[in-house]
Length: 465
Ligand code: GDL
Image 1 (cartoon, helix red, strand yellow):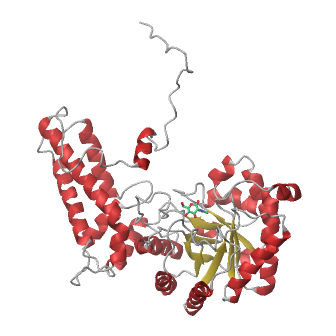
Image 2 (cartoon, rainbow, N blue to C red):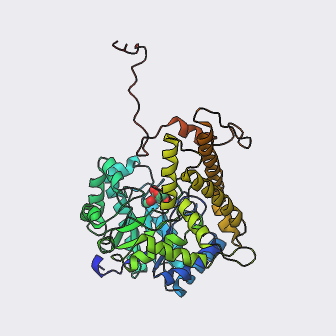
Image 3 (cartoon, rainbow, N blue to C red):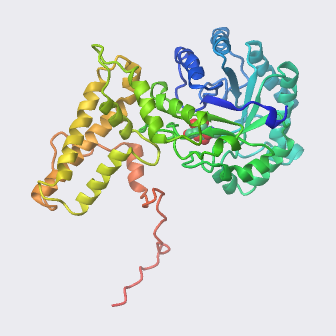
């Protein structure tokens, strides 16, 4: 089937690092996917050890039974089930036995009813073993050989299945940085059959914007429109954060320029309502999509499911505050951003104690404190525990900043600020925090370029008087 004949794919890709979702969570998700208008669920958790690190091993009967149950549930709900396999960490592409092992492993999945198969080559060493280097000469040729070997088998056994590859360079930044990244994509695109789809995450691994123009050269290189693997809501690379903000920065022309669209969302299953609902809203009407409107609708739908102990629902303002605190990778929500702007201004020039910005910070710190108290009453304990660390920290930090701003307004910037509940060296410490303190960030959030230091042994230049 040529690209233009194939139906657009859309859905959820469980493709992150960290704790995979539970079986019951996936079963809960599947019927809802259809309601949102999606057609696919892709099973690709990096830490299913038999999917990646030990990809050659078959699933045990109990594991296989669960996978079969998922496949059956998908079918019952009109959802395509995609199984991903990631052999790239250690496969020797030139060894015929490796392709046999890959086929044998995938056959186990086909026997369970799987039709759609995804071959993942992301996040693997960029090097070939000596035999493969000698036989294939390049990574792309080696991978295309493996992929086409597997897909030839799949075309026989499951002709109606979809076949998708995630390349090793799966975003522009990687293709640009790899030196031969674009040659790699061209070579892969030339060798994969026209019935194969290819994943792409945009300009970056986590892309702030993706539109048709940004796909033009990669589509040309691959000889097909890519399937979007969207990491906008993925939080596995910074577990102190969660993303509850709306899908944003996806051009109205992106849907038509792609062959499918998947969200690879937050690792905690419970916090993905907005990610799922807003991508669905975008796909239903890309031209009419307004993130804020989609967010409001998503929050209303989510709120209806959020009951507190005693039967009451979480308040609209409370859910909005939670969302604002955990928004998107580049910013908090608009109201919290406005507060942060006020705080920056006050740190530059402390207001007098009656400054309304101080009152707003006092109220905000109080609201965040109250929010945590309210969240502890959630009947969905899994959701509470998923939110806990992030809201706990937001509460502690907003309280200390509100007090600090107030202290400066009252005592002037020179006075010492002490807090008995904050033992020095217990907050914001630990290995990662200590390392982060060593690496200064510039205003754009990048690690600041090193100051030019004179070579060892050279005396610093004397200042000209
Ligand atoms: C990645 C990984 C993905 C991970 C994501 C966000 C792809 C193709 N692969 O690089 O598993 O969840 O970044 O950290 O995106």
